[in-house]
Amino acid sequence: MKRHAVLWSLIVLAVVMLAPFVIVALNALKTPAQYASDGPLALPSDITFQGVIDFWDRVGFGQKLLNSFIISGSVAVLAVVVSVLNAYALGIGRIRGRSWILIAFLVANTLPQEAMVYPLYFLAKETGLYDTQLSVIIIFTIIQAAFGTYLLSSTYAGFPHELLEAARIDGANKWQTLVRIVVPISRPTLGVLFVFSFIWTWNEFFLPLVLLISNDTQTVPVALGVLQGQRLMDATMTSASALLGVIPAIAFFLIFQRTLTRGITAGAVK
Amino acid sequence: MIAKTLRDRGSYLLFLIPGALLLVAVILVPFAMNIGISFTRWQGVGDPKWTGLDNYTRLLGDGTFWSSFQHNLALVVAMAILPTAIGLVIAAALFDVIGKRFGQRAASVLRACVYLPQVLPIAVAGIVWSWILAPQGALNEFLGVVGLGSLGQNWLGDPEVALWSVMGVLLWIQIGYPVVIFMAGLQRADPSLYEAAELDGASWWGRFWHVTVPQIRPEVFVVLLTCTIAALKVFGPIYVLTRGGPGGATNVPSYFSFQNFFEKTQVGYGAAIATVLTVLILILTTVFLKVQNRGERA
Image 1 (tube, rainbow over the protein chains, first blue to last red):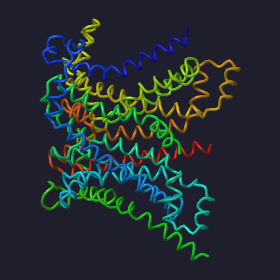
Image 2: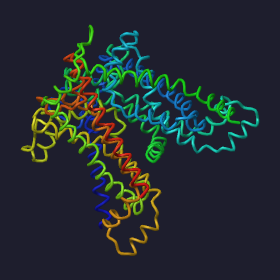
Image 3: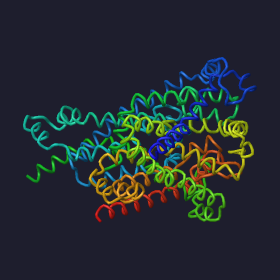
Image 4: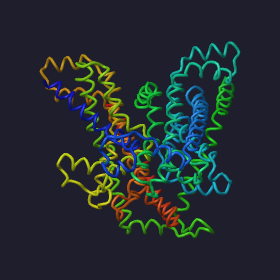
């Protein structure tokens, strides 16, 4: 009896958590006329993708998706590479002052972006990188790599010594040891890191909002956020825009779910 | 031998070069510049004018600054304290009751539902909710349908209510994170302790408080720290939901500094706000890590 009470209250909770997604989907598929007459809670009488298509064309959503993929994909690859290099030096190389260097990366990961945004904006303008995807890629590579360095260094500190020794005896230099031994063995952790860097970069808002101002460079969240701020859209178009923002996130969630839950655990306990 | 070790370390140092260069160029130098700017009066063009501590003394007397930090405290409650407390109960219920009596599958499906908002870009979550909370939006409509129309509000437009609405949205976004982490922590909890507690006739609540919570203490610390820092940095939801309004009722330091940087072009003042926020976050991180270390040693 009591068990069922727990089950039901958790089901109610799940429904509350999902309700906003359902409502958004309902209204994105309605005609504006039906929205006006029946309100936001009614089921769509005839399903139309017109609102979604209109919104897609109006903001050039395909371009935004492409921009987001280019930026997040590049950052994920580069951040993994930089993290591996850092962690190799810190965790396996055990170079002098490593704990201070590690603290520097940890602090870099903790600093609020507000405390760097204006100089970054200023420097980007000075170097001609303002409003280019390259500027955002460079910045988020190191922000995500700061986390990756922290995560990987502790993994690499426990790397089996015999393997490294064996590689050395076989005449492998440090670079070969890294590429042929360390990277293949740590591939699962690198996968987690890749997924995290990708999704976090995809979801970033503040710095891309400041640095990317033109249609050709903006990411999905920035484009949606800016439009929302202008309050020019009607209700069905707003929900169409929200639906288009939600779909990639849910797709990533389903694709990466296993890696994600594993990864969150890896990051949580040092 | 010593020479060889040194050479060894030297060559490992080479691997650190790309990361170190990026760290200095993208994070440390801009951060130092920001501190420098905070001691000046600067419009973003022309030469900054050195004004010493003027920006900081001005902050102390600025009501908007103080209220933005008060709002930040409310967001810490909504994003760190409540999610941790509620997350503990949900995780324990999912792990202890659902997982054991109704199967792992049921537990993971429910967990996925609770976690879903976490994967949304925060700006998109803001759009979803600003539309639901609009005066003619879905929430007021729903209240009308179930006969509670009198509870309807201008959720984001009323200065008395707006901060509460923002807190509710952030709680919705945040709650999945502690649940997932706590459930993972419970996997490594020692089952024999539960059996012992059960034999001793401990109630569910007693077991929860004396067995479950102490076992996942490290996770609780990590969640509290990361969520508190996230709460202090909140920008996206404020930008999309309220723009700090109505009448500054939901302004937070992050948004306040953004306004000074890019809307009022009082760059020096914005830099001072950002610096204070940074110092606060660094102090908090240090204190948390100290307490955590002490807890582990005890």
